[in-house]
Image (cartoon, rainbow, N blue to C red; front, side, top):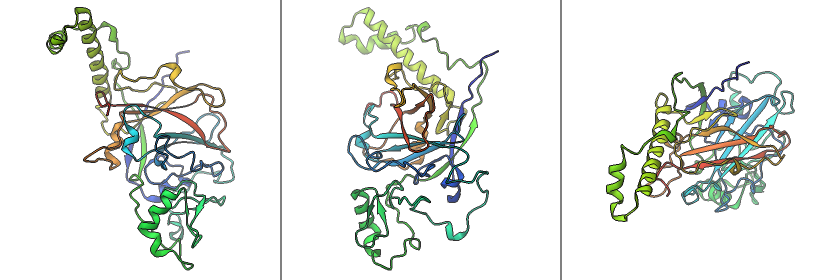
Length: 358
């Protein structure tokens, strides 16, 4: 029997009605607040904070990705909003979680999700799950802290409580405060919200971009440039040849990356569970031992990667420093261990754009 060919799914962002991005629709989406799948074991504030600065992480995106043994399954990525925590190959400013549910569960209907908007009375943002868990008014994560005056709004941290107090809640906080009747202020913390839609990648049968024979390249095309650039360093011939060859390999990988995405330059995500990432550089590519095993003891496999094109939609550009990445590669448990009563933390590898060491 011939080996099955893994199909790469490409993800793109598009505008969508807000109700389509809520939990009952099982969305794949970027930005806004997380649409939690399971209501049991939602990560607490300590789990969703930056490993560097300790501030609350912002929801980046989620991918609805059912697989064998999991009727409902979603992967979530959170990231720090502080550009200082994104320097170099630093990845402690990111967190990845996986959650899954069987078809028959206590939260959702056994049948398909409704294909029409909910009644107008239920269109406002809800900060309380069906199970009773209350969510942070700023970020939509678990909110164990309550306003001590009105006891009607919750927060994940003092940071977000102060943010909301200064912007809106100070003027509204009283016993008659109608939580549902007030539109939530824009705190400038959330990323813009989009739906992620996917389609199969179309590739040419003779495309050899995934099987580059880097070792067959020579340094003839670049040797003169290399020699003139490094002449005053007085490097010997072997060192110059090695540098020329390395630069040629680097160019080959980057050009192959650009060629592979050229037909769909707006792709923000590439999904292929058990496949291979499309790296844009030879620099900082993980070795086998760099990918830690799942807490259950099973190995992790590549599932999807976030592309740098997503940054164009997040409004993070700055005259100074900005959030930045080249590739965010997500690895999940190969055994797809149980994640029905809690959110399992998975692994993310960050690769920068070549030459952008920050």
